[in-house]
Length: 292
Image (cartoon, rainbow, N blue to C red):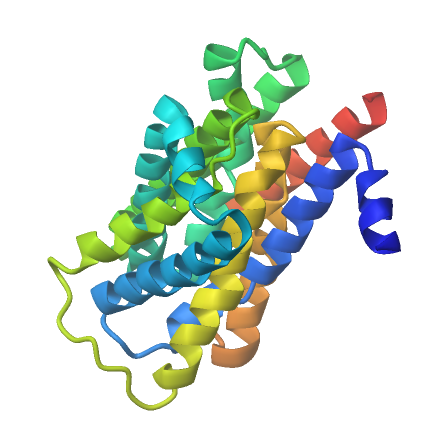
């Protein structure tokens, strides 16, 4: 009880930051699990939709009972937008990693904070300051640099899907921020169901063999179900851009997991572009926190 009381004493900034940090730490081994699985891409997308759906859906039925559906319908337009963006990003993330280097995908995802800042200025009337605009320009140029390298080595399709994932994360975070009085976790649950249903049109096999019997369910619960609940709640307390800044941790830690276990190394161009993006956003975040 004392722990719950101490959590209630946290400021909105502290609550949002804690939720986002814990979520991203759960996500960091996700890319490694995707690489270690042998199931086909659409089979993986299916299980990453259906297992988290049932896990969180039944958990929410226990907590909210039939109010789950009341909360879902009360989310209105925000809920519909979040279901669409959440579904798209869940598909594009997996397909991206299957079609390019893990580092490339995660670096594309790292651009989400800057995209959130742009969208926040347009839709939430939260205009970025000059430092943020400079950071946006630098990260944009670094992404173009990585794209040119990917075209030459045939990874462009995977990289563009990674950028679409980042855009979806930014739109989703802005949606949550603009409707922060609404609980969009039920919408995210429905989004997971849509992901599984979409994958059914392309799936080749449902059979899990070998280590997939353990890796796929573990990934779906630890790296997908738990984080998506936390990431959906976090923007109710802090800005969308701040939530997405925590994904920089995945950009740094995710490739380390992959390199350590399966020795997958990024290209020199990816390393250069990634260092520029991470440094730019890191310095920008430090200056923002210092000023606040």
